[in-house]
Length: 283
Image (tube, rainbow, N blue to C red; front, top):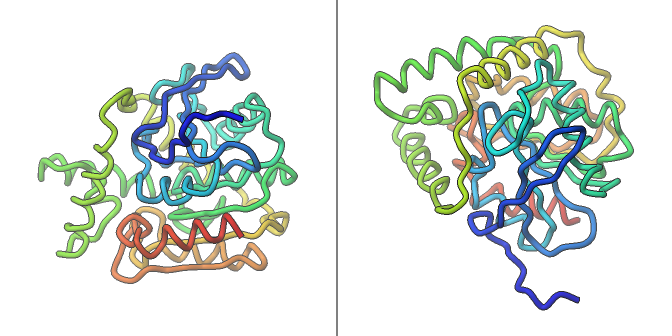
């Protein structure tokens, strides 16, 4: 048995890599090793450094957590896949390369889309599923993510702020305060930080989301895993009604909608959400 202390801080988790399907995937591990790991699926344009440490660390207090960069993003090699299905295939190759045949999933936004495709294709792989700030394939207005994203990026350039302040949070006093606190938490890691996503890779991800939104719906009745769905009540990026749509399609799922919050509702309400998510995944 290892005598090394268990790392439970994402800001301190060492950078690692593994080869899978010809791609070098960058990832980080934290929390007690052994048992079924919780694999985190990140959002549009995000790298390993975009996970809120208050949520990751809360889950890593009792669970083996794995975060990873998708192909062509951050420190992972290759090019960004053109479809969400291909991104799900990448995730499967990465997970299997690590030697895991059963995982729990925590996902946010585009990561939730990838996670859905992964579970539909490999239902035996996933034991529990957390879907936040996301929606189903072919969901109403899912394809409008692209226009909203570009508009809010323009607004952020004019305001000289991070686009996530507009994309993730309401522009009221509570939202602005939550945005600043969230962005400050993302800077807590000071070593081995990822490079930001490139413009071409970002555009490719957006087009993949558009295709996902305009595709025929997946049969989510296949999802029999315990599923927790969460969002804010005013998600402009992936409309909040899509979380309700997921809840209707996934039998037995739990739904949490946080008031007066947007796409980043789980980050604004991390003090309430983190223990709920940790309890759900550990039960």
